[in-house]
Each structure stands twice: as C-alpha cells, then as structure tokens.
Image 1 (tube, rainbow, N blue to C red):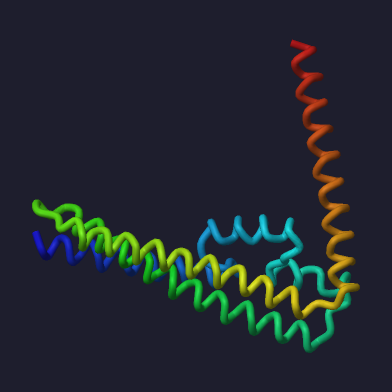
Image 2: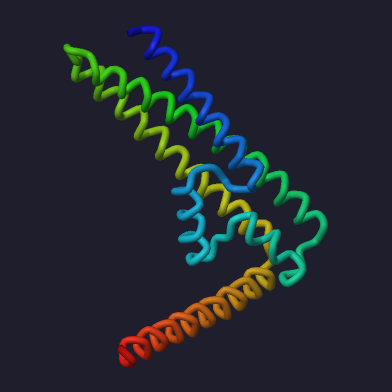
Length: 174
C-alpha cells in the first residue's frame, strides 16, 4: 500500500514538473488561472509581458525596456512554476492525510491555511509583477496600449454581432 502511494506521489510530481516545463516553453506564466487573471488585469490597465512584447513595435518599446521585460517575465515564470509546484505538493499531502482513519482537525486546518496563504502569495506576486511591468512604460506607451485595446474590443463586439446575426438568419431559414 505504501509503495503504491509513493509511486503515485512520485508520478504525480513528475507529471506536474513535466507539464510546468511545457508551459514554460510555451511562454505561459504557469497556471491557467493566473493567465486568466492576467487577462482580467489587462482590462484594468495592467499588461502581461507577452502582450507588451507582442506589441513592442506598435508601442515603441526601447531595447532596454524589451530586455528588462524579458528578464522580468522569465523570473516571474520561474517563481510561478516553483510556487505552483509547492502548492500542488501540499495539496497532495492534504489528500493523503484526508484518507487517514483518524484526522486531527487542527493539523488539517493548518495545512489548508498554508495552501490558502501560498495561493494568496502567488496572486500578490502576479499583481506586483504586472504593476512592475506597467511602471516600465511611459504614459505615451500606456495610452497607445489603451488605444489598441479599445480597437480590439470594438472588433470583438463587431464579430459577436455578426455571429449573432448569422445565427438568427439560420434560425429564420429553418
């Protein structure tokens, strides 16, 4: 039984490590939740490094800004991967602990609070990273990003209205 549990934990850790490496190579910041959070933050005048680097010519980033953004992105991704792995390991420990016949509520609560604190720290680190990126930009660059964002939002809205109209047309034909 212990061997099976050990093999399961080891294979889960390997899977987490491998998927984290794939995510890092793909340029993602770590967890899907944090990517979604980055998108929500962009709507609030915070922009992930991927967006800034993608728009570097349009917003006139200097070579120094590009290098700094790339370094910050890499450091943030490394930190996010490590923190995410630590959270997953602790969640595995909690899962194993919950399988015990006798559960110490105080110990379980302590473990759950530790996971919650780690997730909060991860969110705070992500927001600080986005704020640090924004601080690198000039007011003109921020204004240009806002303009681009507004254009993209307009195109999305137009695309949605075209899709809705196409659906209505299909429904009328049937």
